[in-house]
Length: 235
Ligand SMILES: Nc1ncnc2c1ncn2[C@@H]1O[C@H](COP(=O)(O)OP(=O)(O)OP(=O)(O)O)[C@@H](O)[C@H]1O
Image (cartoon, rainbow, N blue to C red; front, side):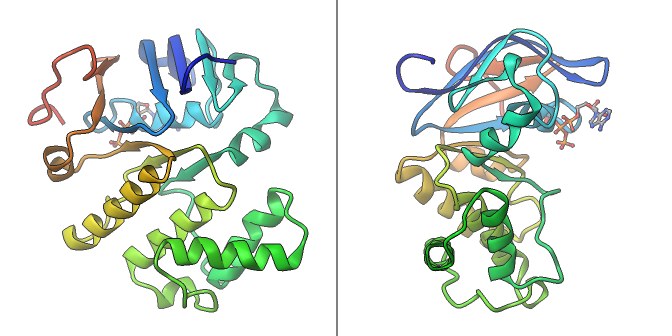
């Protein structure tokens, strides 16, 4: 186990897409309760880094520990357990369009070992209330706005009380006002003790909220804790 309050500790890692090294010498730590932005130009490696964190891409070099799992030693059978401890808000993890919101949430619960119907129903309502959608359980995704659908995706990510949320462009396709609401929801979740690592291209958010920044640039990962990072250029 990693000491202190770290939830993610990556040392000398290399992030690969196939045989191509997308990022090299990646070293960073994220503590419990931290909110961290992940930025960089399109194609610079943000999604690849996040995917490596939840074992969608193999961890081939260096050491990595996330929510108590050693990434370099991770077995295929461990992956679902790792993912249970992470909340993942990704654009390619969207809702099933032909199932209600409740069915979408129950699907994840069943897949992650929930069995007791009453407990499942309670938890479903809890996470929907948390994201401000207490009346959405019986709706189909297409009956919800883009922002509301994103809230359901966040509710789904919260089901198993993750200690960190990994989010890839969660405000990407939303109007600025709606995006702001979604961002505030992430802040609330963070204030209640869940760490957040959020990839974003949204300059306004970065200017408005001076959280720590990790930046993918020319095959390296820069950290605002230790380097001067410009957020105005080279997105
Ligand atoms: N499935 C894949 N197979 C092979 N190469 C990939 C794949 N996905 C991404 N890449 C490559 O890996 C590099 C990093 O891509 P990645 O998607 O991680 O960037 P990103 O910073 O998330 O970009 P964006 O801001 O556009 O989402 C790019 O050169 C990209 O072309």
